[in-house]
Image 1 (cartoon, chains in turn brown, red):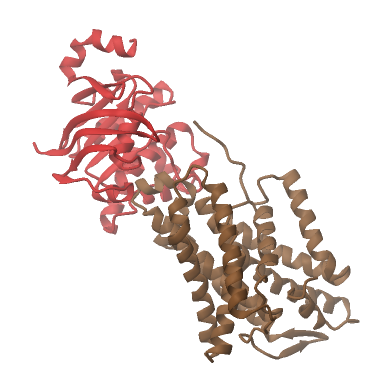
Image 2: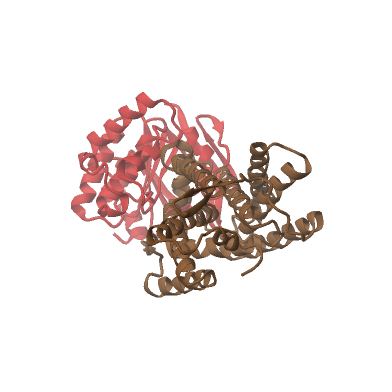
Length: 312
Length: 236
């Protein structure tokens, strides 16, 4: 496992030799913590793909930037914890908006948008990662934005950080769900995702919708990055592993399905925790990758995705 | 009668391929105009260009005696409505959500609900299916949602692209009954059809589009008198 993986820290807090109940509780807590971080990491990716047909290779860097944003605000500028958290989220949103204005908006009308944008965003990812490396160096800093302490239920230790992660992710994803399903703003996003031309004909300014989607994706990714770095540490390359996981989740769920990504993330988090508990942490990721292959063979459109039908 | 939309010297196309060549026409408030012509000669392109989905290469459009702004969303907000070919519904939304999307740029909630009631009166079938997802509807029901969604924006000009396309004759009759009722209001309508036979009973003026230009135009009386012209173009 790489040094910045969250699992080492998670499982070091697990007290072995407990009874079956303890094991289940431990798996639930670890799984929910992992799952909610994965959900945060993948909903933005699913939303960008679903709305714009764009696979954002820089999504992992949005996470890194969120994490470093919070770190800089708390450690270097001495901001209080909630404000530092906010700075991190804001940094993700700003980078999302900047990428849309500088790059994506100029490429949207190309016929080969879906492929060229992957190359372009991969370039953005390399650039941003090197900028962070230049600015902060490669030293694995500790994320100062976190809550200390733990409590015991039976023989199981629950860190306050785990509780904070699940709560924070729950609030953010709940807000996103409310935005998408209950507001006019969300209606515009869903309409654009389903049929771009028709949305335009209804008066939806789709270009603005795309900008908003990238800002939302940036904020969600930044939140994921902050939380992940609070369990591991900061490094310029910290976004790579979560990006692969987010991609796996989106493929298993069905590319573009936001709700599906949320459910899949929680399920895979729980599954990974169970595998980690019974077989060892090192098997979690390979099993996850194996699952993608199986899903792609038997349900190419994903668990929540629909096979596209072309109608004349 | 005042001129609602006037088009002068409009050219447009896809990529490097020019489709429309110097189109001129006008539509007055409260009138129904039909654009007819063979397949692949620019009927849909004309509607898409006027709606702003395709860029205008040259020429001027003015709507409600103002120059038309660019961009489909802006034009839709001004009251220029396109009911596109093949319906283009929001497949993952329910019938009612689709209809309400049509009113996206309206802010008058009360009046919007009135229009929704009108749509359900015109198409009682949609009232029965209001919670059903659009992708589970039949072709005829989809067309009704498409037209109903266009009505919901309460625009001044409604452009309908081939309302009879791909439907059974019985359903086409229902759709045209509905168009006939729509025409009694004060909104202007442009209907595009390949064949003039259906649209002859509702439209007051006809344009024949051939090779990206209007090859003939006239009113209902001239249409019935000009059988030869139409036969030449449409192979009637």
